[in-house]
Length: 385
Image (cartoon, rainbow, N blue to C red; front, side, top):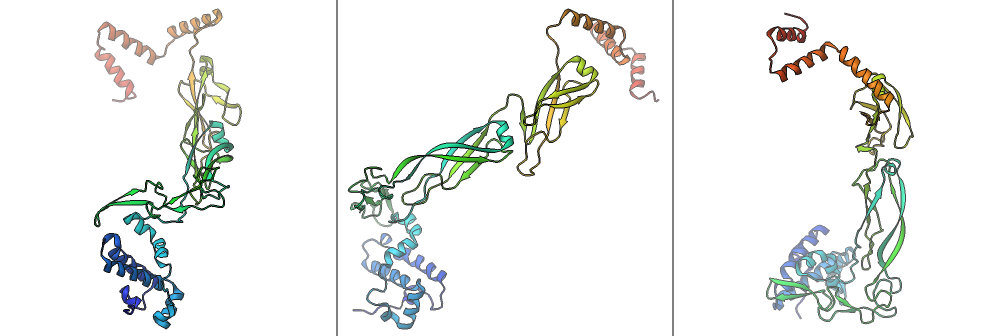
């Protein structure tokens, strides 16, 4: 029986090689000698097993020390016992992505869930919480998440030999397909659990308190760890909550500022004075109108908007003044407006009179005289020559 080669020679590394160098060399050689890349070559298959055995010993600090001191004699009958499966687990991602091999017993993470939550503008301004009911999948407790009836076990799929996939084609270029017998799991369940019917999961309903900060904006999302669906034998995913801030019938939001329109009468606009305006959270608030308040002008109330999530300061409430034209007048109101109209016709300002004269000239087709243009020019330059 031929003697075994030195493990350091097998991996083409020195005795002072660190853990990273050992793993790097193993990856390279394992890919080179993998049976799927060299079908039917028994010599390469032997080299592959040799590489596995060497790596199993040298990657373990205790085994490496014993090997360095006693050589192969210190490894006993099976120096690489169990090494093939352990190493495939250690580099499962590498071989799984290339050769499609399933990794038995590997825990899979669960699936994340999405929840859309609608809140009104006042709730967004205050912050708070809501209790919601979520339906999600959890591991079946009756079978402990195995899918098999208690007291029985799952079995390795005979069709794919537990790999979960079937390879079709010849040589290195092969096509892998999920195993039709086990659905790609690599396992079959001879006696399925009656509660979960072999799925290893059951639907559960749970009330969850979802909190949101003051000033939250439409489209933001929050994450609640561990409240997604559980994976087969693994940890559950997360629950992602997407917030929808509903439109408000009176206030419009721009960042942390609130905007609203407040109607006022002609008399309020002309005379000024104090009026009450609503706020989102602080009740009615007085504002002062200036005499001659114009339609569309803005009055700003500092700190009456929404909290800013970054600065923690509240925005402003911006009141847009809208001068309303009355549609239905009482006889007395109509009388007063006619008196006002008469006064405006008899007593107009020079600018008003000049504008009316220009309108009359435009419709009469008469251009402004040179004297008129000279007067207008003097007026616009303050009378300077």
